[in-house]
Each structure stands twice: as C-alpha cells, then as structure tokens.
Image (tube, rainbow, N blue to C red; front, side):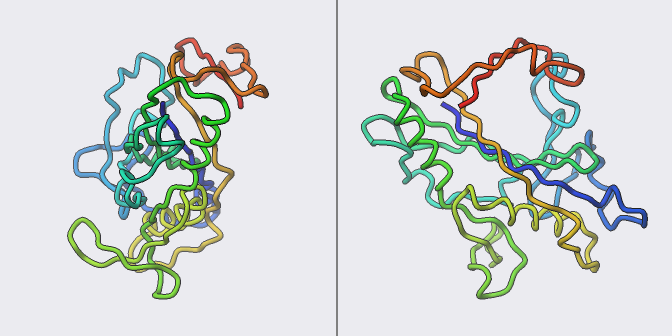
Length: 236
C-alpha cells in the first residue's frame, strides 16, 4: 500500500510585471538533467516511465527532494497496529514544477499489509502517516529551528514537525532555493496550498472501502493533458 501526500505551492513570481528574482535554471518543465539541481532539494531526474503512456508534461522530469525533507527514524515507526503491517519504507520524495506558478512536493511511503486492512485501520494508518516526524531544511536562526547534519556532515538548520504540517516550511525552502544568492526572498511571492493525500492499494490489501467512499466517473477526470490510461478513482 502506498501512502502519498502532495504539497502544492503557488509561486507568484511568474506574474510579476518587473523582472522576477527566480532562477532560470533548471529549465522547467523539461530541465537538462545533466548536472542540474534545485539548491537544498537535490538533482533533477528524468522519469523512467515511457512518456507515451500519458503523463502530464510537468511530470516528465522531477527533482529529487531527499535533501529538503527527511524522515526521523522511519524504520522505527508503525502506521497501524503492529500485527497488521510491517514498518513503513520510504518510497520517494520529489519536487515537480511546470515552469510557471505551479510547484508540487510529493512525499510517499510504502507499507506492507500482513492481512486485508479494515477501513478503520486504513484511516488509522493514514493518520499515523500524516503524523510522521519529519525535518525540512531551513535557513533559520537558533530558536526557530533545530540543528542537524547534512550528507556532508555539516550542521544545517532544520524545522522539525509532523509531515502534514510541513507545507509552509517547504514553500519557504522552495522560495529560498530558487532565489539568486545575494538577493532577499520575499515571503509574499509564494504560498502553501491545501495538501492532497492519496492512497494506492491492491485489491487484496483492503478488506473493504470506508462507508463514505465513492467512485469517481473516469469521464469526469479526463480531458486534454490528462493521462490516457483508464482511471479508476475512489474518493474517501
């Protein structure tokens, strides 16, 4: 079972009348993935999925976001009763951008169910997922943030908190990371939007859907720019 949270970010700098202080590289939505990166997040990557399968244009390439958002002792966490599921594993942390105002950070973990999951336990696992302790890289001051070591062993400031609460910090990190060094980032130029949570599951992993779940007609979620494969969507 895959548990995923999407943090949408509205970057208003492309709408500015005056010149935008936003960095011109990587060249989204299809950056040159050779030695390109987003500062404080990670390097850009090309999707392995065949584009002919029908992914959105701004998802052909993405940025690895492992440096920007980190889990704390993920292997020690349990997302539901211990007898039901194994400890979670990190699936991916990614940053997407359409080259304009639309930015998104996705964080996902995988959990292996030892038996079919009842609706109540699935919702409990989802709540535990959103409560996972995380750390977001932050250019802050002592008292606003904790100290942590980056991949090179250097001390950096991080904002610690539950995964669900990190949208604002990720927005600040994106704004700082894409502003040229030496220029001050204006916090009014980007805003955190309401996050979206997605659960991916196999037919044998859920005993049944919650009573308030409803299926979405595939015809209602199609249209230009959407994936071409058949969609089967359930809203909880």
